[in-house]
Amino acid sequence: MASKRRSSPGPVPKEKQFEVFKRFLFSCRTCKKQVPDVVLILLARAASGRRVADETDEATAMWTECVGCGLKAGEMFVGGDSRCYPSGVRRPIPAMLHMRIEQLEMMDRWLNELLANEDSDVNGLLELVFEMSRRQMYGPGRDELRKLCDKYSVVEVRYAVEIAMGKYLVPDTSCPGGFDDNSFDDAFEKIAGICHLTRADRHDPGLKKLYWIRTILRDRLQATDEDYQDDTALSALRRARDAGVGLDQLELIAQKARDWTDFRDRLDQAIQTHTAILRAEESPEQPKEEPVTA
Image 1: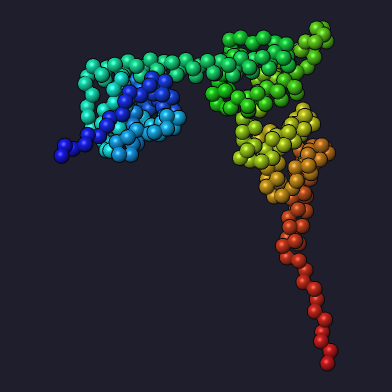
Image 2 (image 1 turned 120 degrees about the vertical axis):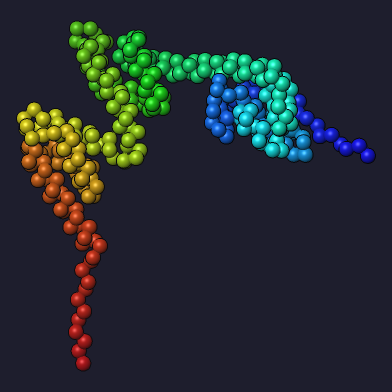
C-alpha cells in the first residue's frame, strides 16, 4: 500500500503576508533580526499537515521567522513566497532573492503608512493649535509636535495643547481675537512639560497638584524671598504629602505663607499635627478598669 503523502499548503496571499509581517514588525520572532538584515518566512501551525481551516483566523495563526531560525522549527509549515515548503526544505536561490525584494517593497509600504498616520496625528494637533490660538505653525513647531507624539501618546499631547493654550495665552489688545506673541511662545513651550507631568502623575498620584501648589508659592515668594528655590519647595511639599498632609491643606499653606521661613514652619506644624493624629488613632487610650469591691 502506497504511503499517503502529506498535502502542502498553498500560496499565502500577499496582503495576508503583509498583515503578518506588520504584526511582527518585519522581524524574526526568535532572533529579533529585522528586514533587510534577514529574509523572513511565515510559519503556521497545522494539524495533520492541514492548513488552518478558517481563513479569517489564518493570519493570526501565523508568525515570522528568518530563514535560519525557520529551518529549525520542526513540524511546521512555512510560507511567504509564491510557493510553500515544508520546514527544513531550503528554497532555491532565485526564490530567496524574489522574497527579499518583495519584503523590502512591503517594508517600504509599511513605513510609508506609519509616516502617513504620524502626519495625520500631527496635522490634527496643528489644527487644534490654530483653533485655540489662530496661529499657523510650520517647520520647527511641526517637528516639535512630531517628537512629542513619538515620546507620548497623541491623547497626552492633545491634552497638553489644550491645557497650555487655554491657560497661558494672553489676548492681544491691539488685535481683536488675537493673542500676544510672547504668550503664544510661552504656551507652546509648556506643552512638553505638561506631557511629562501628566505621565508622571500616573506613577505619583497628586504630583500635578504639587506642581500647581509650587507655582502658587513661586508667584508669591520668588521675587521677594531669596531663600526660595523651586527644587527645595517641591521636595518639602512631597515630604509633607508623603507624611499624610492633604493636598488642599498644602495649597492653603502656600497661599498663607508670608515668606519661606513661615512656609517651612507651617509645613512642619502640619506634619506634626497629622503624625500625632495618626498615633492617637493607632493606639487608642484604654478605658480605666474600676476596682472590684468585695
